[in-house]
Length: 221
Image 1 (cartoon, rainbow, N blue to C red):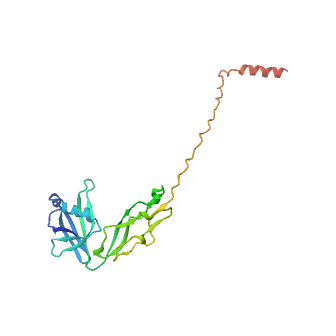
Image 2: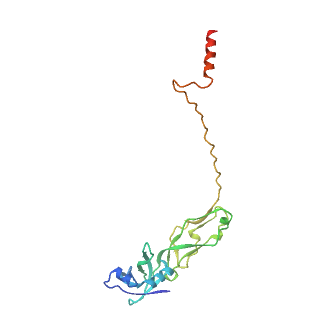
Image 3: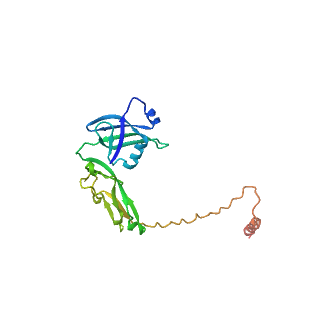
């Protein structure tokens, strides 16, 4: 279980909180009104790295402990500093609808043989009890031995309390045949040699006078 100490946020600005080593945040839920809080920046960053958006984080310091999921985390676009976080408070005894990332494990024999492995899906949506909420779901690629083999969403192993909401027949990963494309050789363009016509008044080319004399002899004859 991941635990995070928080405190109610005062009237100080977000920038003032960050300069003091804290991060502005908010929690809310179906039966919880939106409440502004402040969290130690280092502790929140550590919890975020471990929990992501699919692990329950218990908030302490506000009276009754609250089991939450980090619904959104905002980061500075340049230095990567965590700027703000949203915590969604879970209802006790109710299942959670959530998208869980897939983690591909092992190597596909078909890929080793030179064919193409296509990973088409990277998360699935499930409904699951909070106690069995998975951080990720494993996909075993070692079953993909031949061209045409595939894994569907229905084949992913889920916790006992989970129901798959993603379409069962949706393709998660598949193998397609590698075909080497033949390089098309383009023949070089034909070179056309053009003879320039001499301009009027220009000296005739070599051999032209002889041709003229022959023509006159023919006419006399």
